[in-house]
Amino acid sequence: MVTNQAYLFLIFIINGIIIGVLFDFFRILRKTIKTKDAITYIQDILFWILTGFIVLYSTFTFNNGEIRIFMFIAILIGVIFYMTLVSSYVIKINVTIINFIKNIIQKIFNILITPFKWIYKFAKRILSKPLNFVKRLIIKSGNNLNSKKENFIKILQKNLNLNKEKHFSR
Image (cartoon, rainbow, N blue to C red; front, side):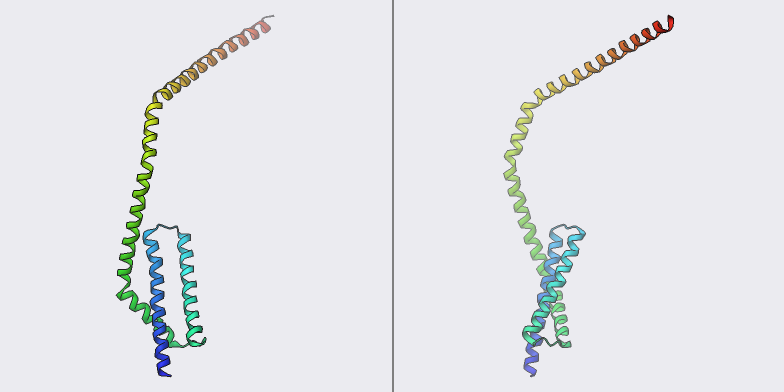
């Protein structure tokens, strides 16, 4: 009986350690990947669902569904043990590894995109003069159209004024 309870106590200390690892997993995600508040809330809900599943699974598997106060004390001891002794090292190591992998991926991406940057610069250099020429022509023709439009409007106004004067002079 006592050995069975000691065994259960150890099982639930291990559950506490697993819950601590799960908690650190979400902390590591938040430190390495910037997420919006909605995603953070979803992660929190997911953490509590997984924690509940771990505790319920262990309770039904190892203690036939009987809930005892010592199980929660053991889980608390496991979490405290993990958080005080191991957590900071796990976070530092994993954040370092993930940031290292992110840097490698970024460098690979930069290497792969470099030829496209060269092509863009080359095309920009070659096409800049013809495009500037076309741009100046469009602007010049637009200015000419504006001046022609203004002249046309002035001529129309003069003709309308002359027509009005002719109507009134009769």
